[in-house]
Amino acid sequence: MLKNRDAYSDEDRFRLAQKFTNRVRVASLSETAVFGEENIPKEGGYIMYSNHQGKYDGVCMCCYHPTPLSILWDVQSSHQIVAKQVCALLDCERIDHTKPAEFMPIVKAIAEKAANGRAYLIYPEGKTSGSNEQLLEFQTGCFMASLLSKTPIVPVVLYDSHKAMNTSDIFHTVRTELHYLKPIPYSEYGRMNRKKVAALVQSRIQEKLDEINREKQQ
Image 1: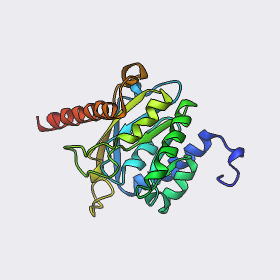
Image 2 (image 1 turned 30 degrees about the vertical axis):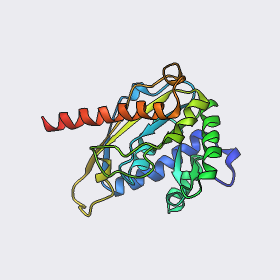
Image 3 (image 1 turned 90 degrees about the vertical axis):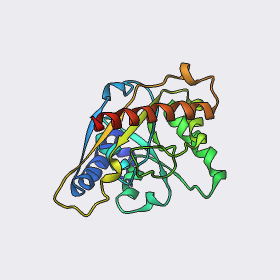
Image 4 (image 1 turned 180 degrees about the vertical axis):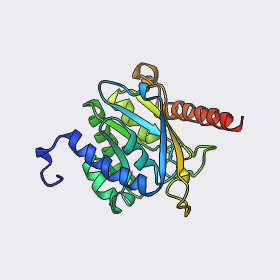
């Protein structure tokens, strides 16, 4: 399929990637409850910004997202087994955090794809937090992709994702949560600089994490 991309649709490649990632999910004894799918834009491109808890995050998003998406992927992890094929099938961008000079061209490429109707996923923390509590500091540069594309921002919250694919327990299923939050239209963030956009998105994600934690404690 990768050698003959023109013979297959974007949907075909995405569904194959879902088959790969779903096998990983099943093998890891993980399940995810999805909330807020009504918040996913029905038309046009958009960029999702998600908290990043662990190595299950990409598997989760690929398995449960209803339509084709691409992911901004760390270059090292993108070359691991299965990840390499999924990354290619999803037409993902790869980023090398040790080469900051390459960052803006990647951001512009993501913006162009989103402006042309693509759904994109970015982890602004840049590395995994391994926690349901406090978010790591957001890297502001990635939000230029939204400012350039002028597409809706969809904050995404992953909960208990750090527990999946991170245990030797082979008898109990790990249950995680995926929450799509209300989109932020360009009309709301378009006059902000990237730091303020990052702060806005981070506050929405943190508020939802705090809300879930309160509910779990009751």
